[in-house]
Amino acid sequence: MPEKLFLSYAFQVEKFDMDTNDTKTAETQVGAALTKRELVVRIAHEMGMNQQEVHEVIQRTLDYITEALQTGKHVEFRDFGVFQVTLRKSRIGRNPNKPADVVRIPPRKVVKFKPGRLMKQIMLEPAPAAQA
Image 1 (tube, rainbow, N blue to C red):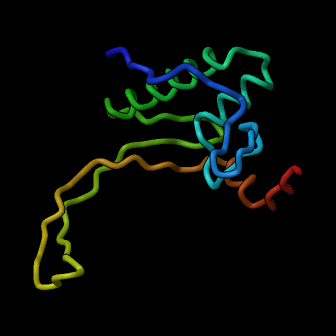
Image 2 (cartoon, rainbow, N blue to C red):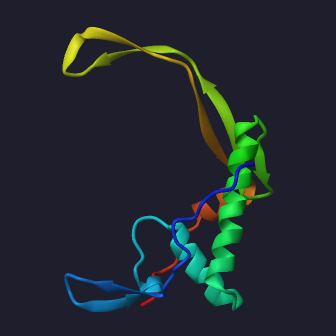
């Protein structure tokens, strides 16, 4: 597998918001998505590890998952779920701005995720209250 280049290993726990001239910690900046950066900071803090090492472990894990899917394998994490590659058939599409134009959409591979038993159970439970 070719080596991946990381753009930056410089992680900081604090971020500076130019609009409000305020410094916030990464844990308080929770958006609609959980980012790799948030995972790195949280795991490094909880495990007492260096953020650079945690980032490398997460990146290699993601690289190995991608490599397995690319070679046609499925990736299974017991009780969490399964990632697998499926083939979407070729189909006919239409341009919404020009409905008379017919466009052939070629077949393509897509990654699908099927949640595991434990994941399904957790998703049925109400979300925990946000920490203040």
